[in-house]
Image 1 (cartoon, one colour):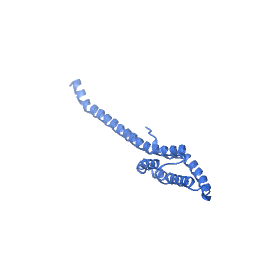
Image 2 (tube, rainbow, N blue to C red):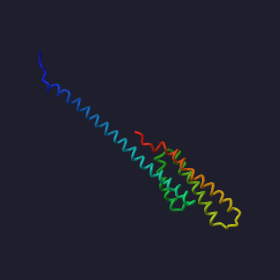
Image 3 (tube, rainbow, N blue to C red):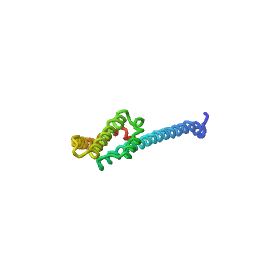
Image 4 (cartoon, helix red, strand yellow):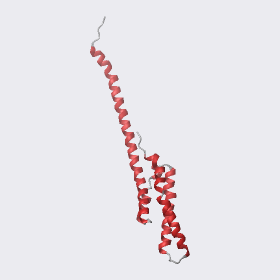
Length: 153
């Protein structure tokens, strides 16, 4: 009977063990890259989300929005069409933006118009309604963005 030396067993097992170690390392690197991608997307989405919250916060505290804040809002949501789905992009670039423009119109008509102008009271009422609607958008924004902002592992 031929006796096989223990080094033959070690030699035979070395290649499969090294292949298994290499496959494990490759898998871990792939998972790390996937998690990095999720984090990068989260950071970019958070930038858009925060730009909207900043605009809503400014509106809530000042009752109006200036041109500087409007520019910050528009530049902040610019990447939304690629980072979020079409529903969120449409909400930010059309629905919410149109209400911001409406608020500015009512603001202008209330403060730059004559006090005795018959349209003034209408614009005061419309401005109040628009402000209420905009302030209520915090929760709507959270609901629309929630599925994109989860980092689940």
